[in-house]
Each structure stands twice: as C-alpha cells, then as structure tokens.
Amino acid sequence: MTRSMLVLKNGIMLTITSVLVGIINMFFSAFIARKIGSEAMGIFSLIMSVFTFAMTLAISGVNLATTRLVAEEMAFGRTKSAHKALGLCIAYSLFFSILACILLILSAGLIGNNFLHQQLVIIPLKILAISLPFASLSSVFSGYFAAMQKGGRASTSVLFDSLARVFIVTHLVSVVFAGQGVEKMIIAIILGSTIAEMLGCLYRFACYKFGKKEKNNSVKNREDNSLFKRLLHIAIPVALASYLKSALSTTKQTLVPINLVRFGMVTSVALSQYGIIQGMVLPLLFFPMCFLFAFSQLLVPEVSALAAREYSKRIKQVISKIFKTTMIFSIFCSVIFIAYAQPLSEWIFKRPDIAPMVRIFALCMPITYFDVIVDSLLKGLDKQVAVVNINIIDSVVTIGMILTLIPNFGIAGYIAVFFISETFNAILSIGKLLKTIACPFDFLNWLVKPLAAAIIALLVSHNLVLFIIAYFATLILTKSLTKEDLKI
Image (cartoon, rainbow, N blue to C red; front, side, top):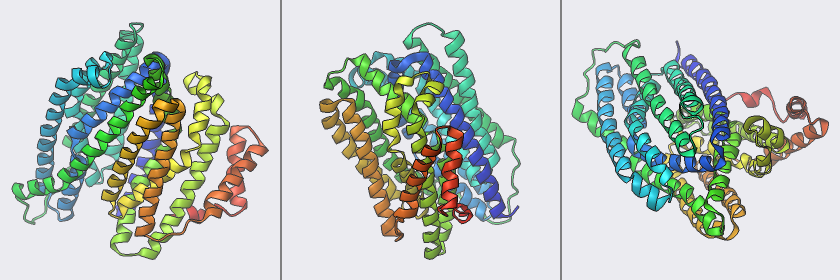
C-alpha cells in the first residue's frame, strides 16, 4: 500500500472513530448528568480538572517521544531499535506515572479540604490515582501505533475505551450504587472509569503483543544510551511546558465555583451552575468538534510535508480552503444550536431550562472552532512552542479575569470571561499564523455568505432537515461552496 493510500485509510478510520466516540461520549455525559444532577456534575468537573494535571505529570510528553523515536528508527529499517525505544518509553512512563499516582494519593486530602473545599473529592481522587500508570502506558502504545501507521489498532483502542467506560459506569451507577446518594454515585463513575482505563491498557498491550511484527533490516541498530538521550531531549521540554499549561488550566477551572461563592451564591448553587455549563452545555456544543478533531489530526503531517518542501504558495492555498470550510461548518453548527437549543436540550439532557445558556455559548462556537484549526496549522508549521506559549498567556489572563469579574458579576462574569478568553486566544493564534504564512482573510466568502445562507435557511424552514438542505443548497447555488473547497 502506498503512503498516500495509507494516510487516506488511516484518515477515514480516524474520522469514523472520532465521530462514533464523540456521539457515545455526548450521550453518556447526558446520561450521567440526568443520573447525578447538576450539583454533582459540578463536583465531578472539579475532580476531573485536578486529575487532568495529574495525568499531565503521568504522561510527561511520552506519547510524542514514542511516536518520534519509533518512527525515526523505522524510517531506517531499525526494527530492533524501534522496540528498544518502546521499552525505554515504557520505563519512562512507569517512573512518572507511579510518581504522579503516589503524589495524588498523598495530596488528595489537602486538595479536597484546603483547595477545593469539598471533602467529597478525596476518595474519588485516590481511586483515579490508581488509573494513572495504566493511562500513561496506554499513551505509549498509542504513540507506537501512530508511528507504525497502525490506524486500525489506534482507532479500535479509542473505541474500546469509550465502550468499556460506558458499560462499566452504567452498570455501577444503575445497579451496584443505585439510589445511594451523590457521593456514592460519583465514586461509581470514578471507579468505572478507572477499571475501563485498566482494560484499555490491557487491550493496547494485546494489540501490540499479538500484532504483526516488522522484520529488522541489516542496518546497525542504535545503542540504548543514544535512544535514552533522544527520549529525554524530546519528552522533557514538552513535559515542562505541559506542566505549566495544565497547572494554569486546572487553577482556572477550580477558581470558577470558588469565585461564584464569593459573588454571593450558596455553594450548592455555585456547583450546580458550574456543573450545568461544564457538564452539559459545553460538551453539547463541543460535540461537532469531533469532525474537526479528525480533520485537524490529518492537517499536521500534511502541512509539515509542504513546509519541509518550502511550497509556500501551495500552503497558502491549503490554508485558505481550510479557513473557508471551517467557517462554513462552525457557523452552521452555531446557528443550529441557537435555533434548536430548546428541543436539543430537552431531547439529550431532559433539561429544557438550560436552552438559554446553550444559545449564549453557541455564539462563541465559530471563534472556538476556528482556533482549533489554527492551532493545528501552527503545529504543522513547527510552531508548537508558540501554541503552548499562547495558551499559557491566555490562561494567566483568564485567571486574572476570573478573580475580578466573577466575584462582581457572577455567571454573567463567567460568560464574559469565556468569550474574552476564546477571542483573545484566537487573535493571538491567528496573528502568529499570519506572521508565519501571509494569508488574507476573505470576509465575504468565509463569513458574510455563510451567515447569509444560515439566515435564509432559517427563513425557509424551522425543520432541522430542511434547514440543513437549504443552508448548503444556498452556499452551492451562490458558488460559496464548491467541490474544490473540499479537496486538500
């Protein structure tokens, strides 16, 4: 199979898997929200924000290091060296993940009592700590599959994770811990997620162990010492940047309910409002991003290849098409959520009362979606350090706004923080991209025409299916969307 066919095959599998997992996770989040309520969702969101930082420490850049080391060795036919690199990455992973596990267990009480002011989070954090070594090892095997172009194994692994989590958590919540209170329900979710993480790691190991192995060429393999130095050279800088970024992100998330209480809300109400936004509204709005995620994953290597060959004109053409299709897609999604917020909220969450919040946050979707694609393009142009720096700057500014706006304006302040933060991050990212590759922004075709098409479609019909047909028909008839736009 040629490289282009292999890339296409992996791209199709990644897209299908991403969409399936996105659908599963969205409806699973809705199920959990209905089972435990908005206040418990707020507590669960706080737990996961802390766990995210622990996960960052456990992984410590090993996924990227595994992918690069294995891919570089296989490029020269050094299969033995590639497997040695994998072994070193496993050892590196175990060191950092066990360290993260111990630190999270020891600090769970301190975090719960003094930082989050919620004793309910202590036991769940200790349970989640057990999953860190398994999650880190899964990251190593995922990096190996990516390097070896094993798209099928990578895709089935992600799908297996989601299905295992859904089945186990659903059984624990609905049967084992049914009707036992908020604390037990949260523990059920955490315990189920931990077991699913363990099974996912075992599944990846089985895929590696029993998969087809490549033959080693007659070329000289690298020494372990050389591989270890390269591992540290790749992983440590990524890890350090990730620590800072994740720490700021965790701080940002945990400060929101704390400052809602400072505004004057009762703690339970503050957690409920936070849970509605983080556990219901944003997951619903970010669901369509599963399409963009698969798309952006394919952009990095393709744009990198063009940049390596210094095809600047071709890069501009590709970026222009990407910008256009992204704006058309994001405006389409934004208008759907604004127009159909009520039925969607009632159908998915059985909570029609969250529709106003869905409409408000949906206004920011084009900015958020566009920023995701811009970040992927920057990574493809070897500007990943700039992406990290922008996210760090954004987090610092956002924390400052959280501390000033939310205590004075409550939920309105949080909404303002979200919109300003997303816009600020997008402006910095777009500015960096335009400095790297000069590409003009076509307001007429990328913004005005899609907005006009959405308005026309709404006027034609309030039926969702007819709206979709009318939207894209209008774009095609006005030649705003052509077959050429969809070719990268």
